[in-house]
Length: 404
Image 1 (cartoon, rainbow, N blue to C red):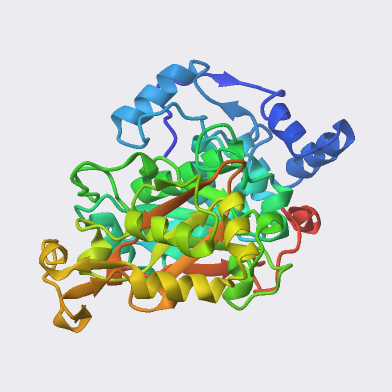
Image 2 (cartoon, rainbow, N blue to C red; image 1 turned 30 degrees about the vertical axis):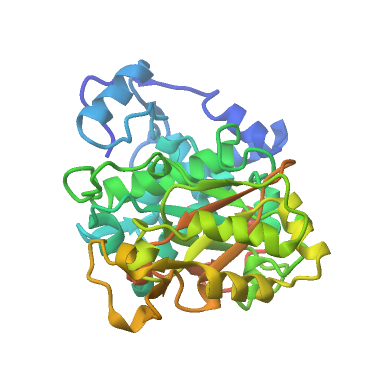
């Protein structure tokens, strides 16, 4: 994927130092790591294989990649060999290991290609395990990546992080967690999108046929605020230990705000949420399925203080979030009669379709994101090593070999 035309050779010894500083490495660690890299060359045939080959004009590199339809339109970080080797320290996969096959192009998502796209997105090395896990999750059959990529619907892929690793890499789960300002949220979500474009072939107008697209397709990644959650966090709800780090992927629309500063009871607040969510025109209105409910901590406290548990919320929303059948049956797929009851359609198939997480800062707000109906199911996977053993900390990779 690199551009070898008109490049000049430079030896950039400072390349990546600021990135290393972000993950707390001192100068001695850098020295030891460089020595280790020198003993684990990608190619042993020559002494200079670790020199950096990159056009010093980053703007020119970004534009060249853009013209080759390898970017999302934003500037990229050139994926140099040195940056590649730094990132490969945070995986026990071999560079040529195929992590997943990604449709519609059936592209081979090798470890090396995932890292290259992650570097381009601006990721620091410690984010690599999260991106790798997300790639594995979207490749699961139940997620239906072919449908998510090829649809005219503006379905984006949301990444939700839970567990110790999310806190270790400082993913934002608080103020502005769905917006700009955090390197983990911004670049992890963007790395997934670049992998979808460059490996899966989901280039707008080619493998991605969304009529208008969505700003959520640039990056949609955040962490659950587990310390602010009065209920069971998402990974525990889905069968994992609280100390297990997980990645959840979900195909959804861009989030829509629910503004309620006056409700003081759970029922009042949930009614506001329901009337915001139960709208015709969403996929859920004619193809009932999952939808994402990101409840702000203040709203969560209001509901919890009223004695409502998570299952109570899910049941109430499932029973009351309904759309009149004459409005529901206007979507792209003909409404199946099994979803019609008394002239109305529920936007979810069961209470389990309400994917409820807590995130955000101060303010009485909640976000909802309609799903992709029955066409895609969210997937939650634990962060693990290659052998399936759990990853407890990003630093667990310190004892792993860089290159086999």
